[in-house]
Image 1 (cartoon, chains in turn cyan, brown):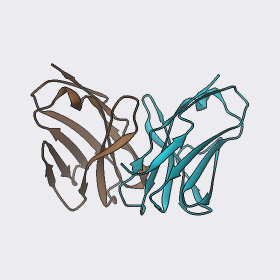
Image 2: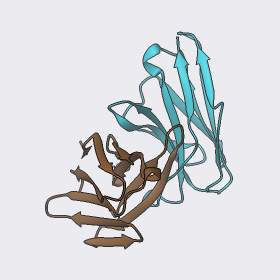
Image 3: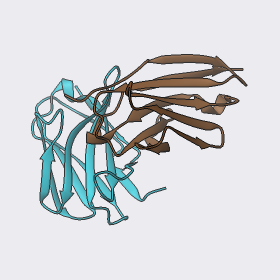
Image 4: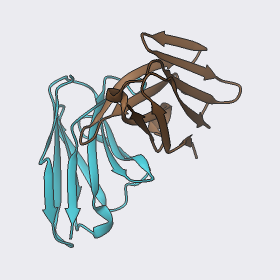
Length: 112
Length: 106
């Protein structure tokens, strides 16, 4: 398995609080991605990074920000969590944009 | 924008073949992928096909690609209960289908 970890694995928080999810990789891959998975929607891309300090928006980026200060870490921040952001969040990595993506185990976030 | 569509559910008997279908709109993808997701887990790459191929076989898995119709399928031969999972197809531009839940009954 590709070396990808996500933390925390589960989190329950209240509406309006900030939340940061962390993705850590040991593969030295250039690309890192954040997806959310919701019933009926499959996987939707939130943000991705193509290098340190290089990020871009995905399909559902509103309400989310990201940062990548090191190759191995990609952080996803919900500045003020809302109930609509209750979801399972997956991080993925790839060597290049057209390469296979390898996924982390996921973080289940519940916003009350 | 780009779109990938899959049927949501498929139920088969153990030992039968399963065929999971996917249609896509973006024809510029270099590769097309199939991922498997077991309950409570992340996605695992199952197989992939290069866009200039029509078919790829990998043990019990056969991938068929019809570029003209923009149709991708995954056939699982001799389906086992351990194959029960959600299967996602994905193309370039980081677009995934909704996933097909495969249920295998003994």
